[in-house]
Image 1 (cartoon, rainbow, N blue to C red):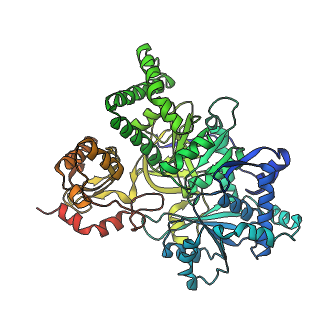
Image 2: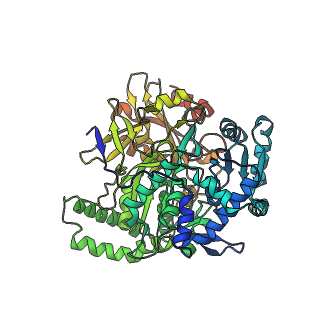
Image 3: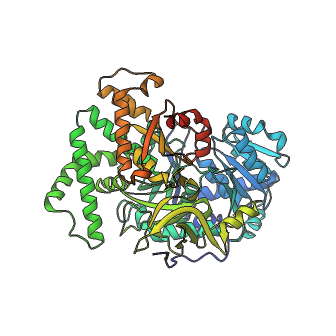
Length: 608
């Protein structure tokens, strides 16, 4: 199949903007619990629709009092926290445009976003962020205001705007239309300087309303319960931003968690008790690997692997039944599943707060087996696909007919087309308006409303999309063989000891790879094999460790032809990090930067 269209469920809003719903919810159900936020003692407290409306109004007044006007661009540089959502909706209320900046951005990255977008003001989280911007402020002539969240910025603005009448704010809000620009989100910049994606209020409203209408059953752990989600994705990323908008529009109780590490996340999951959450595959991989290591430490590796096998087989049987291809799990498999649910699966769900039965994921590919395992363990993960340019999700697996290993069908109202060269093209009301100040890039990406994504994929007979690679990442060996590195890299990363893998071989005689290690997994592996702790340089030369990584490479090579297979590899002592400019903020590999930084190691892979 070359093209598939899903009929729309939600209509594109004819009037209004993103902030209107804040005032409508407060009017219609003022006591509804809209958000949860932590107090200074670390306890979660409820925020009603009326309270949130009042805070948005007070902050909007403060921003107006400080000279922020309709159409002004204001940067936010912060981790995921309540104040980000408050500022987003206050700025949208007065028709300002938000420019999100990752909290880990370098001074030059900050400079480019603020300079290109001509930001007149910026909100930062703490002093380090303020100092980062201060180092480039002499090159930002449009920037006149800087507020720091951890220095009382919110209260300062409340006080500044106290004398402004509500009607002044409402006049601004009523001037916002679906065509008004809501945000300029800069791409990760894996292939060059980041580009500012211009996304309107209408793009966000259509995307969020479609997701709510189609996937609303996913938000609940059981019929009739209150939907709640804890957001730990970065709000600087379009995925996290879409979750925020959808939660506010859909009346989902919504909380923020700024850290993705288990030590911080697990206690908040237990306290907040979300009914569902949205994450990237990396999160689910971490949960799975941590559970496996725990079982191995307790001497229960065998039972855990059996539990994994049963979960996968159970989910495969349920998948086949949903598609009319089988009767479902056998009586024996159901009995085994019930046993392991008590021993293994229920404990994993409890660690995630006890109420999570469904989740959504995107941002990168999820291994089919991992998705099947979680489904068999009682947490159904609906994988999707999208870009900043499509305001997050363009496709997603529907709840009633998930096809694991695919990114699902087009969301309602969207068309997916596969071009002659395999490139994925998208069409729908959630497709962005173009790149700020970059007509050439806009013309390359948009063709009569169609978005050329740069991704490669295929559609099956039911309209389910499978991602096969990136056009710009295709390697061509000196022998003329085209190789898509993604499938190899993902399979190597399936090994618990492997953190990252990058495949190289462009204009080279064969394909090779650089591999980094998962430090927690390695420490566990050393302990389980009675090996002493080693310095990184010594560790990468350990013969047993090399044998383990070789197994991962051999497994990956079974997926491709001999000419496409990884011929040799090198284990690196240090991981690729964002701090060293080798990863984007969304954890994607910066291939050119890595190959430059490790040029000597790459050359060594091709020496006779």
